[in-house]
Length: 138
Image 1 (cartoon, rainbow, N blue to C red):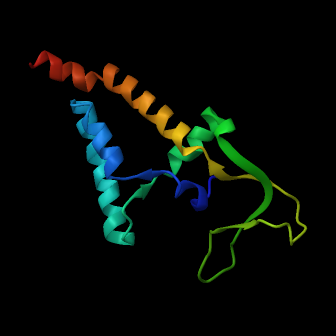
Image 2: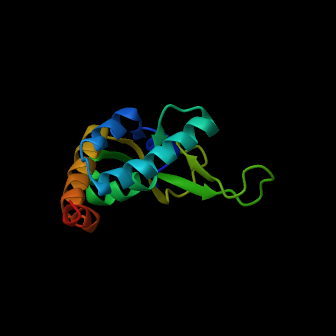
């Protein structure tokens, strides 16, 4: 499980957007467009100066599990609460003595994440059909 405590460590901010601007391509502009929208949504909704990346953290664990600290914990899904129905509850300290049933990620090497993410984005930018159309029109 890739909880919010983990995903809040991976931040899209103005520095990430600025790095993407160096792509100077249709692909880069599209990535900047959706990340800027996402960033603005977090600024207006939560007053954050960044937007956390949730799903990419879970995917990155599959790609590079050595970049994470992970512990087996008991995790239950709240199903009878008026206020938190559907929420995951992690027994971080084992106080319930329930069977540990889930690998919970707690820390990650964010430098490794961003290095790999930008490497993938650079390759995607080089091979994007969007940019081929741009090249044909210039």
